[in-house]
Length: 486
Image 1 (tube, one colour):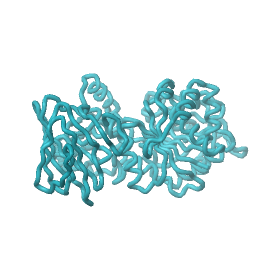
Image 2 (cartoon, helix red, strand yellow):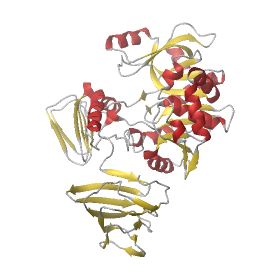
Image 3 (tube, helix red, strand yellow):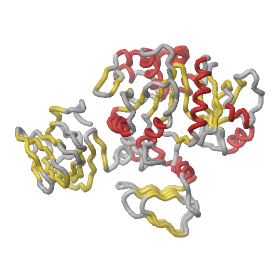
Image 4 (cartoon, helix red, strand yellow):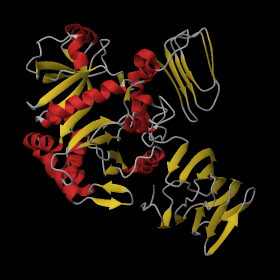
């Protein structure tokens, strides 16, 4: 049986400030009304003999991932939580070990959660071809037929064809017929001149980072090449446990695993690597310029989202989230406005946005990590204003949801209900607070919010005290099984 394995642990730093580590690009609706993760799962519909998907993500994103799966009616998936990021080889090894406990001949369709594919028919045909090669003992990757000398991707050089009746040259008939080839070599991101030679030779394809692997064959090759990775992952799976709807790998074992990609660990060294070239309208949305290329443009080559006014402006991507953005007399720019940050970058330098993210980290700022709106399993909160000894938040509690029973050492809180009805616990008293009513929570007093209604509960929270950090939360009870914070 074929099991989709969706890798959803990346941070998407090149799409900052929209993408941040707590809510990265795969969880955002960048190409449609659904998130990239949701689109990745939905385009698998119709695949024959496929099992429940396994989604690999980190602890911070687990509740958002679970909610997004519920929104598209993905029933009974496995959401595997990595205690720490260790790149793709260990993540896939842990999934392989988990799946082999269920089925001896499990196949894994390993997919990043943040890619775009337009031609679903070609995509499904390539998967079916890869299944046959995987059953024959090959570790299969998908090569994207290049339409330009792209320097932002790695490349795969084809080797000998795997079909006896295939010729030694590649033509359009073979590409549409999905001929499989042995992999001659993987090549790092080239310079422009080298990329041009690769495209002209027609011997190279872009490395998509998507794979179809036999769980057993992958583990055999990984154990031969990097036994320490398999040993750590085997222990992490043996000691794994279920936490609500999540499957947690054992932290102590998993963090000892080296951080290494599938390409470096296995695919570049194994003699079992195979590649299927396919033209399926693929993009990894790896930068703002690639997002500009994806979207339809106006007559001046511009892409706009939100409230935007342009004059004498060409070939720009302008994204307005909260405010009106106007651009006059500019070209080839990316302008992205959010509640707490504005990015202006030339389209030729969008790969360098990650430098800004690294600088934010080194300065101890939070804009690389969270948005003003922060999602929680019960809903969300959004910072509205902050000053010395006070902070104002807008809180949304989903119908039926309940915050933890908690207290704070350093702050008191005032709650004003804007819409809906709140069931409020303060100390040993429980009462309802209706729209336009308010309640006070003294410092050091246990309290809890519950939305007993059928519509979202919206309220304004005013915090006051000498310290207002999120780590000043002491939980006594929590229906979501969270630890001290989170």
